[in-house]
Length: 291
Image (cartoon, rainbow, N blue to C red; front, side, top):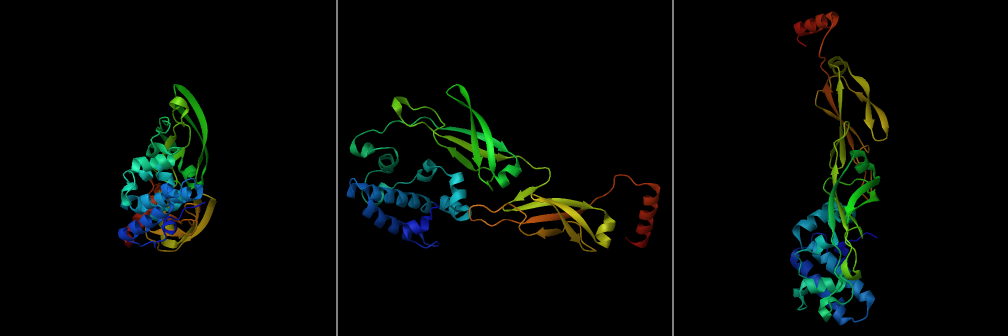
């Protein structure tokens, strides 16, 4: 289920930091586990409130959340990233953020009750290169990685529309924990290989189409590659080189509530490397006529 952090705190999307802090303080006091011992529902609610505050109180995280939405945001930020450098406890006189975080997310009551939670295994991080089309359309990718000296292979689901630099978290595929603790996680940082046909610009795609000078002068129709196959477009007479023709809805596919982007056919002149005698004469005649 998607998380609307603004709705969780009960604030407007343009709320300032003072309003966000006030809303968090009020909800945190109501649902804090120390005030609701044994109440799992209150603890879950407090976790939601804490996570929402950790994101919306940080300028960079909030900008990323507003730009990419819940799905895109969580491709970039793990739970550890979300709570990094956020002190949840000092807002209402509780323990420090490390105590509170371990209490809520580390299993059991944590150090706030004098018990150290089990040590989690080491997290691993690696870069994975994927083709642009896989990034656009989504799908599965096999990934080989080294774990405890052994090569392991896993299938990873690539969400449609993932962007360069996004992180995918594979839970439990990191290092083994001592004393039976939770295994670490594997974080895959996505690198997208250049595509010979398509260039991505945010939610849109760009395709270069080269046409003879004569066709730009007279007008023509031509085929444009799209993710769904070839599509024929009309190029009007006198179309200027460097101009773009928009194909609405043929860009990055729609995903997670985000509409499909557009594809732009970038029209340029194809200049022949060599001319035969007839072509050379015609070009010279055109040059004499002012073309």
